Amino acid sequence: MGSKVRHVLGLSGGKDSSALAIYMRDRVPEMEYYFCDTQKELPETYEYLDRLQAYLGKPIVRLNAERGFDHWLEMYGGYLPSSQMRWCTRMLKIKPFEEFVGDDLVFSYIGIRADEDRDGYISHKPNITPVYPFKEDGIRERDVFEILENAGVGLPKYYEWRTRSGCYFCFFQRKAEWVGLMERHPELFEKAKQYEKFDEERGVRYTWSNNESLEELAAPERVADIKRKQELAIKKKAKAQPGQKLYQIFNATLEDEDDTEPCTICTT
Image (spheres, rainbow, N blue to C red):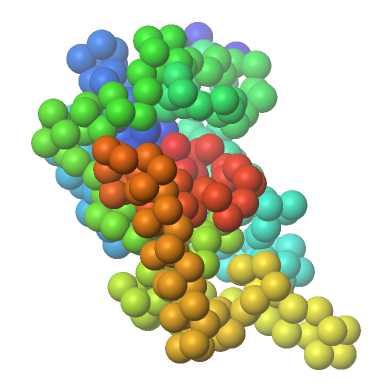
């Protein structure tokens, strides 16, 4: 084990880890900031990281996996990653992070909030100790919004249509988020479609979204149905929870679709 003691904070491009970086900037001046870049991220994510880096006043180290998504897709026999097989997180996020810290004694700062009931520790190397400042200090979601607003950083632009950071083809996207990708980044939607495969001989479908291909989802009548259901859900949430921000209402309606937790290192 290395003798050097390091403090590191991983950024996903999402609101919580970004707020934590701002929160810790003056508390731990020696903090190292990093971002695991899959090179399959949204343009809004890169733009937001540049904005955050300017505020922090030090570089956000970009960690790139030795081999990219397409290589690992081939190694895993063409099986797209899913909630049951999250090889993308392991090979493109956790492995580059563990190589980054090496054998040094590391305190890894994680943006899990006090109002969340989940654990964000993503590595079991004995030299890495997780630290949860938001949990320890009672920082909740409303405080995160305030931290970002007061710093002048704000929210990433993708929050207008998407609730999480992560790859543009992340399988955790809800139906309405896929529609958002199709409308705002049609070229990325088309690239995501190209990854889907259909093995007619075996009757096997490899799709990002459960039980539906992106080709099927993009049909005009299906898009209209998704939008209609989303609008009804937003109105229902807004009536039941008055005073909440539009982002919070939008986020809550998408969260209602399922209870599968995405990978913390990708989305916090």
